[in-house]
View 1 (cartoon, one colour):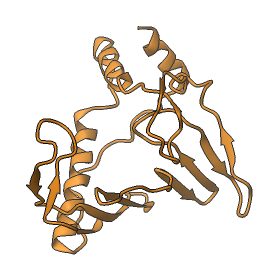
View 2: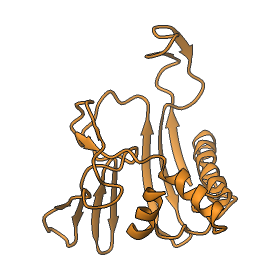
View 3: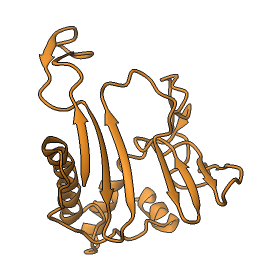
View 4: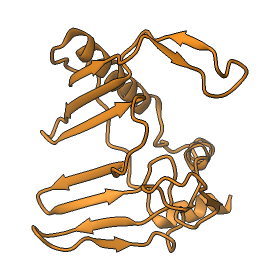
Length: 190
């Protein structure tokens, strides 16, 4: 993990809740850029910021040897997946409405140009999968090993940013089993 971060202001204002309008001291970087190299030598780059007022960038773009893919906001499941398979080829939108976790069930009123107006909120599906797996005595995807690895990545990004040097992760985990449509449909019925 390699990361660089910056704290752009020493104070911030609460925007919601009972402390709305009051300020607090900023103790951490509020914008962080990072590179993570996976065991298979794949590299991802990320940028997380509390300092951006508005943007039109996609939430996630992945580039590979056989094409590029844009996925919608990971906070929701709605919106098209956009794929370009060859150098210089057109981007093709693929609707997810026919997928079990793609059916629209909420309307987004944020007005942000990079967010789909119709979205799918299935955040509880991970918990449903965990309960189903525990009841059926099979390994669930969101297990402690994966959670520890995600936490290790987050801590390593912060540490790398603070130390201004590369940090090696202390953990690994198995890649979770693919979550296919049949399995998702079974969960949604329970």
